[in-house]
Image (cartoon, rainbow, N blue to C red; front, side, top):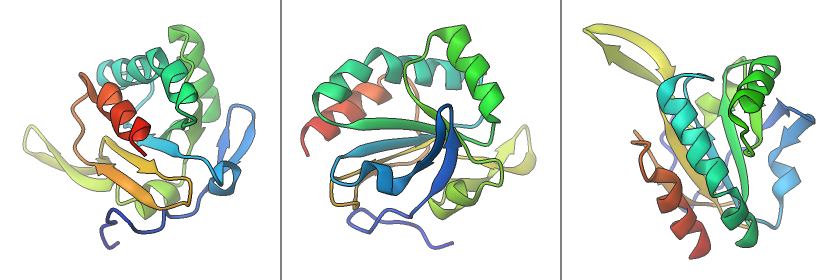
Length: 154
């Protein structure tokens, strides 16, 4: 998979969210933030979802939609959302096709063990469907606020 670059067209997707199918075309004409995270209900992923949730109203005010994506099931997302009162919509990519299309399925290394997993990454897609900003290897603290600033600047 070739690396995506800013200015390129966002790869199309169709996933299942809490209220049914979610696809790129649903967001045509409005900016969208897609963030990929490794796993529901783990400390970093919970913190990231909480930060995006806390700023959801600001993203909405800027006319920007939010979508969190992992390989977790819709049922797992529902539990995660309820447990932490999350307001960010989450979608399930169990096969990893979208995660792969965005170049976020990568080799990871923990304690010397190499394995494939989801790289914490965020994509800001502008109203015309182009990648306006790409964040790789995201560190959670303050990230949602940084993405909001970039989204407001579109």
